[in-house]
Image 1 (cartoon, one colour):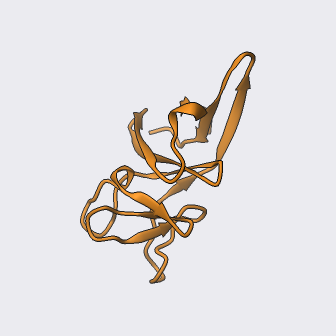
Image 2: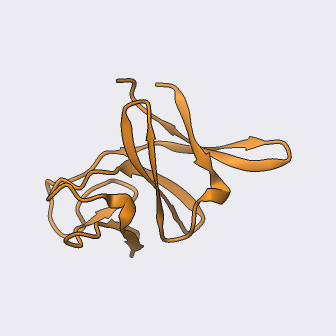
Length: 108
């Protein structure tokens, strides 16, 4: 799977998400403790927009019904068997510019 550039690191705000739609993927890109994380944007409970939520205790919290998904695994914090997809992330350094947040996305 190829690395896909999603945004510049300086576009992210600690504890919040940025919505990114690219190559058929709708994603929530989070910054938590200076580390970027990428999850599918769709909450499996009621279709909430995870990028519209916030980070709490290392989890992406859906703004609709407050379901919390672990940023590192995508698993629902309080109940097993429910998860959103997560993607490997790396920072791509560019000379004289902020790093790019890249994710290893499956091709549609």
